[in-house]
View 1 (cartoon, helix red, strand yellow):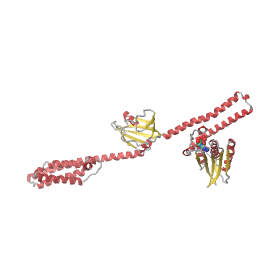
View 2 (cartoon, helix red, strand yellow):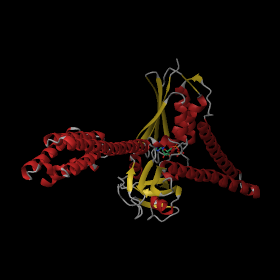
View 3 (tube, rainbow, N blue to C red):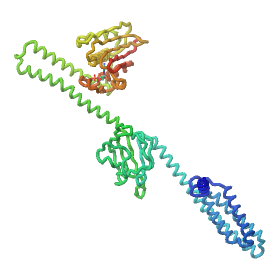
View 4 (cartoon, rainbow, N blue to C red):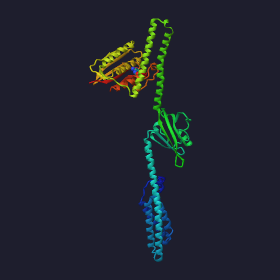
Amino acid sequence: MFAKVMKGIVQYLSPINRLGKRKYSFFFPLFSILFTFIFIEAFVQIILKNPDAVGLLAIFIPIALIIYFAFRDGLKGGFTAVVLTISYYFYIIYSREHSGEQLITSLETTGVLGLLYFLLAGIIGWLKQTIDKLIELEADERRRFQAIVQQLPVGVIITDKDGAIGFVNRRANNILGMKIPIGFNVMKGVFVKVVESKNFPTSQSLLGRALKSGKTIISEELTIETESGRKVYIEASASAIRNKHGRIIAAAEIVSDVTAQKEHEKRKDDFVNMASHELKTPITSMKLYLDALARNSKKYDREQINKMVTSVRNQTERLQKLVSDLLDVSRLQTGKLSFQKDKFDLAKLVEDAVIELRAFAPEKKITFSGKIAGKVLADQFRIYQVITNLLTNAIKYSGDTRDINVRVKKEKKRVVVSVQDFGFGIAKDQQKKIFDRLYQVMDDREKTFPGLGMGLYISREIVRRHKGQIWVESEKGKGSTFFFNLPMSG
Ligand code: ADP
């Protein structure tokens, strides 16, 4: 308690503590100086009992007070001290009843000292106020800098010249998935868990290297693991910062999260691999059949040849479908997919598709229901593509179950088509993603199905561009129902 009070008093009295605050008091100097002069008077009059002994005391103590208050309270404090001191001098001259020669000398001395005191208070007070202004300016500058850096879309970490972290923006904490410790010294190691980095040992921090070498390190890629165990791909650059004399005064690092980019790249690579595989398989099998036939066609009877030719035709169709899907995806990406719209009966189109696919998958029992009056204005060919895509998926992903139900109904000025199967189903967290480009559910059982994850993406884009909606209701292991709707025309 006592220590606290003492600390409070020292802080109040200390001029250093008030630097940069621009608080200049008037009453504190006034009263404390008055009190000091009364004390001096009492001391010489009552204790020393010699009024003339005031001489040196009346010089040194006021000088000390002027310096102190000019430094603590600027021009206001300094000039208050000077005015009070001169007044005190006049009081001394008056109360000691100086006269004649002595009076003149006293008045002259007071004049000269007064001038010197004003000069002293003026210089110190002005210096003090200038320093305050500079400090405030720098604080403003720092605040402005921090406000800007906080808004940046990249993470920023700044250390002092010795490597102690002094500033971190929120984004840096978010990207690295932790609260970056202020004060941590980057020369001593890394504060994140680096799992992998291309060009340097994972125990060295980028900032530490930048400080040590004095160079800029541009766009290093590293993989880190956040506190919650998530893997994040980072791209980071660090640089030593120098003042105008070339001396290193700090280091700064900029980090950005490139995880999404990396994953996209990986999906693209996977896609190229899978696409090559998907294209190669039918070609290889076709070549085998054709080679056999070319070598010795007489070896085979009519039935065998028919089988081979049918197989080759099926593979050709598979290839054709793949290539046209690839083309569609590319057209969608470049905005070059165009539609030829006309009015037609959607229910009829769905029924046609069902009839065609029944022949394609005789092992399934595909039912159709729904007769509605009302047409849609759409591209028949493209909508047929959507329906067959949903149907082939239902066939593909229904496993051993037989039933597939197709329904068409009217719902508020829209025609809704649904395709229901009782097969594998889709987990909740995958249900949105399956409509993304090149997305396939990676599940051991389903990996064996050929496909590139283009069908639902193409379907979604076609439906969307007809002002329709497409969605799925599904439960893992129980089956799925895919829906899409289109606005009725007229
Ligand atoms: P592909 O069938 O070529 O893989 P799609 O875009 O048609 O591509 O489908 C994307 C993914 O959605 C499929 O890989 C599959 O995992 C899942 N899927 C689509 N339809 C069904 C369905 N009826 N039942 C279960 N999963 C489905």
